[in-house]
Amino acid sequence: MSTIAASVGKLTLIVGFGAESLIEDVITGFFMLFENQYNVGDIVEISGFRGTVSDIGIRTTSITDNGGNVKIINNSNMKDILNRSDHVSRSVADIQIPYETDLEALEAKLPGMMDAIYALHTDQMQSAPRYLGVQELGESGITLRFVADVDESNIYTVQRILNHDLLIFFRKEKVECPYPQVDIHQK
Image (cartoon, rainbow, N blue to C red; front, side, top):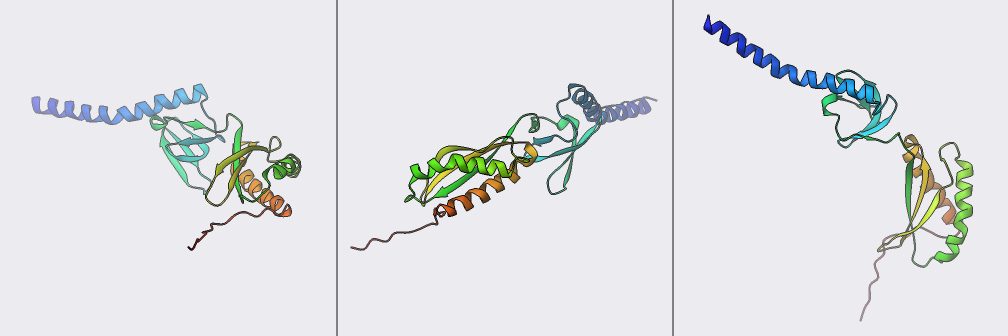
C-alpha cells in the first residue's frame, strides 16, 4: 500500500511540475489580453524576432515576419516586448557624397528636394523628410543623414524610397556617390 501511495505521490509531483508552465502561460495570456499590451496586427519585436502579431491565444502568441515565417511563443516567454506600432517610427537613410562637393550649396537645395519627395509619397510618409546633417566623415566621403516619420509598416519601404530619390536628386546636381579610392604617393 505504501508503494502505491508513493507512486501516486511521485506522479502527482510530476504532473504538478508539468502543469506549472501551462498555468503560467494561461495566467500570462489573461493578463496580456486584459492589459492590451499589443493587438493582432501590431508590429512587435521580441528576442530579435520582428513581425506582425497574427494571433493571440490564451496560451501562445503567433508572430509572422515579412518572409511569412510564423513564430509561436508561449505567453510566459513574452518578455521584453517592443511594440513598434504604438508610436510614429522613423525611416533613416544615410547617403555619402564626395569630399569635393560644395556642401553649403547642396544643403541650400535640400529643403526643396525634401518637399518634392514628400509630394510624391504622401501615402507612405507622415510628413516631409528632414535633413539632419553630416553623420560621419568617412574614408571615401561625407555621410549625410535623412529621416522621415512613417508608420512602422512602411519603415523599410520609405528607407528605399529615400535612397532612390536622393540618389537621383544628387545625380541631377552632378553629385555622385563616392567609391573607395587609394592614393599612392611616390618619392
